[in-house]
Image 1 (cartoon, one colour):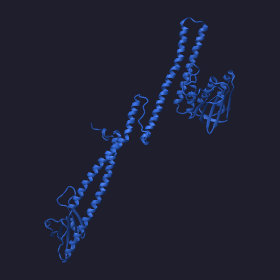
Image 2 (cartoon, helix red, strand yellow; image 1 turned 45 degrees about the horizontal axis):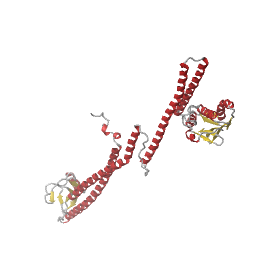
Image 3 (cartoon, rainbow, N blue to C red; image 1 turned 180 degrees about the vertical axis):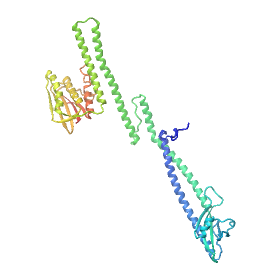
Amino acid sequence: MTPPPGRRPRWWRPRRLPIVLRLLIAVAAAMSVVLTGAAGLVYWRVEHALDQQLNEDLAKYRNGLSNALGRDGTLPQGPAGSLYQVIDAHGRITMASNGQHATPLLTAAELRASGAGTTVHHDIGRLLPIEPTSLRLEAGRVRLPDGTTVVAVAAIQRGHRDEALRELLGQLALAAGLTLVAASYVGYRTARAALGPVERYRTRAATLADGASGLRLPVPDDRDDELTRLGHTLNRMLDRLEAAAEREHRFIADASHELRTPLALLRAELDVALHRPRTAAELTDTLRAVDAEVQRLVDLSNALLDLEELGSTQHITRTPVDLADLVRATVDRHRDAAERDHRTLTADIAPATVSVDTRWVRPALGNLLGNALRHGAGDIRVTAVVRDGRLRLAVADEGAGFPAGFLPQAFDRFSRAEASRTTRGSGLGLAFVAAVAASHDGTARAENTERGTVVTIEVPC
């Protein structure tokens, strides 16, 4: 099938060729240019040297011929293979070497130019293809003793010069061809050796893409080149992908368990209520239990939706807000709960204006206060300060603190200090706090102190 006009055939699309083949073509093309240039320079230098020697011999022979004609007409013996002709003003050959009396070596135009006093140089025969007659001649006007003028033509055979140049061309072509083949082979092997690790990485990555786990790219430890660093980078990426996949699987399992528990309780309450007739008081208790589990499901769904929205938000909408207003509005909503537990809730707020997304910072601070009220003990203190362009919100209580082994995963989803999943809360509060901090390019951390627990959010403002 003929491709449309202006469109290259499919087999000649460089981007479709393998990289090794493209590198081989590039090396071969570059070497061809270099070798052609080098061969041309060598040929030009040798040709120039041979021509210079040939021209010197020819000029010496013609000068001797002209001098002899100007004296007594006794012509000198020329170099081996030399020829001469003496042509008068009418174009007749008056003197010539053996076999050169029939046809002048000069054309009519060259003969007129020589007769006018111009020295004419002319080659007869070509270098390639080989011709039987190969001469270089020089002609000039000579005045004879009787006052007449003639044109003296001196010629020397070019056979040795042409043979040397043809031999040089053959040797250059052979050397260039062998060098090109060797360079192409070396370039091919080098490209294969350089791209071999890339192909191994691709093969192993394809295995990983097919669902295999725990595999890593074969990266040597005793090298530090570009491909080795690429391999280490890919292995770190695979580690992160595997960790992310593990977290995703754990999240799905935990979410399924968290949803299954309230749904099972709902089903049990309804089964018990429908098993036999119930009094109005018993039905009211059942509805209250169902309502509590439904609220638990709603809270869990809202928390998951908030986390998903935070994770997919491209830009946090920051607005200037007074720090005291931001913190006091949240603290005041939890003050009644603290007083019911006979606990003191205080706030230490530095005067400042911060640029944050209050839609997320307020509930994050509320989660920290809620955790301190549910799981902590003693007085609760909120600290809000701005230092070096960063807002620091800290909530401290006087409870027993987090178990030491729990601190590293305190901000993971569905993680709780208590092993039982029937305790209050979904285990998403601190995960939400960490997500809010990360969305503001900040951090969240939890630590145990001598007086209790401190959870801190620090974000640029």
